[in-house]
View 1 (tube, rainbow, N blue to C red):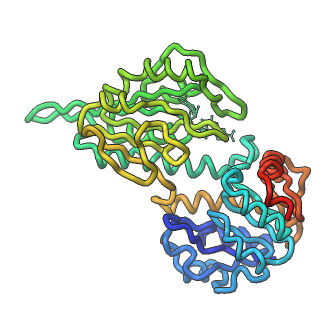
View 2 (tube, rainbow, N blue to C red):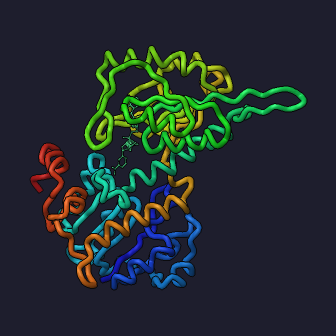
View 3 (cartoon, rainbow, N blue to C red):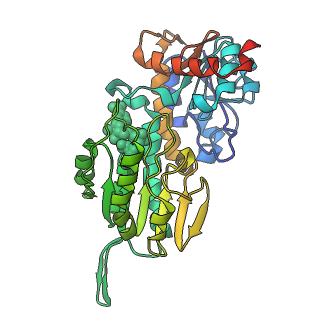
Length: 379
Ligand code: NAD
């Protein structure tokens, strides 16, 4: 079976869905990898690297392909060139991409969304949300360190002592913990807060201090947080305000699956920070944890620099691609059947992340969204 690696078309997308180092894993499974020319270039992987790894490079890579791998979903105008009932694997934010889901369904393809890989131990090596959050967390700390007009570590010199910078991280999940670890390695004094009980121990194990607000924890299912009620949100902001004001760097990563990001820091709290302070909001694209932040923009408000994230993993494209490739290859090989691919819907991982299959929308929440989305369904 031919597996195509699509060139990415998004304006700020520099990742590629398969790095040359992983071509052999698909080839060993009897799959023929064909890459669109230049697909890996923005991540530093040349067409010759793919050829050396045993892949073909061809402008017609998608023509007749039984499977296509990409980071962003491929354009709907390209669905017709694939083999009938082809498998597509990519990030596919279903709620924002209903038209695309319809097109995939109508084309009869089997579409998998990497966001929907379940959070179970067996699926950890396929968990692209975690692998990309890991990259984003690292980058967040570096962005802040580079923009802060101060040292991060404590420095004792003959000319005087420089105190360490104070970094506050809100949301200590995968990205937050990596931001904490990176800021600690740079020598900053790090404090962190999260609504999940398990986070306190994880924060402390990295040498950071957990900010205990003495509020009830908000555990959800699958290791995720629950949404805050409005009163609890107000109280949390009030209790966090002095910690925000004392921070030189504020990094926010808080998210609740399927919802827009919770507002943790108001414009008033930002105004209380010292001029020169830096805010990095990794949740900017899903509404933002910090009031006033704009995704993909760097703005200064009252002397405080607000950095709004947009596709941060793509800013470290080589390693983000390497990790994503591993996730995608592991998912694809779960469907291996002889020298072809045949998804087994009795497998809970396959079943959970499949959105469309043979003309049907299999993912129930997406099907409900489509059923309730009105007119287009009658066509
Ligand atoms: P996420 O991206 O959904 O959220 C980021 C963090 O924000 C989470 O730690 C969450 O608790 C926190 N948060 C949400 N609302 C908040 C608020 N109002 N105030 C402060 N913090 C808030 O989550 P994530 O980083 O992808 O993962 C969270 C946890 O899930 C991980 O730390 C891990 O324990 C678990 N996990 C499990 C698996 C697995 O079992 N396969 C994989 C990945 C993660």
